[in-house]
Length: 231
Image 1 (cartoon, helix red, strand yellow):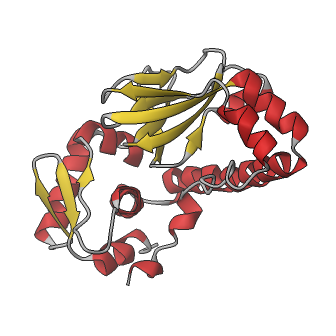
Image 2: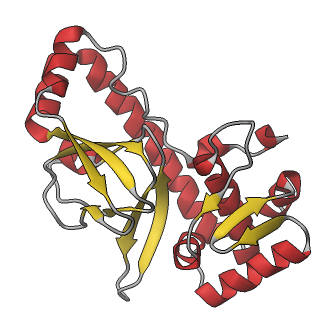
């Protein structure tokens, strides 16, 4: 039973931020909206840049990451379809604290900064939703930090596979294909690629997963849940 893993603890819940707002507010938001295509590996925005608007994933997946003092990258979140990103820096009037890169070929909607801020100024409901979303996302970031601090590499690998299963899941009638390269998965888990590859082999030997190229398929969901919660 997949409901035994609390995916909400590790996922943003911002898909409905701009849904069902008054027509005049939606009209402001839709003015100047652009649809942009990004190839896998392309930057949507970069750490240290000034925010120019917010983004919504229409198709594909986007990885959010930071660069460590050693020059390595740590992926701390994967955005799936209909999730918004880029509004934290805009609201705080600061530079981007992270980067967003297309994990796979993606289609992204862009809402200009001026229109987004104008809509917030006119809508108490939108302001309330954003405050609620930011509060929830703070909890998600805390849980992500706990992964690195409290769990072993084996547990983190299992946890991240469960999180990714939720991100890549499309419908109940087809098997979920987790399409991610080993470098990115190692970055999420917070370990070396070699350690990650050994861990995946262990999971395969334990018949928890199977792989085909870079694709990963979960075969024993409850088994992975048990591994992830073994502390």
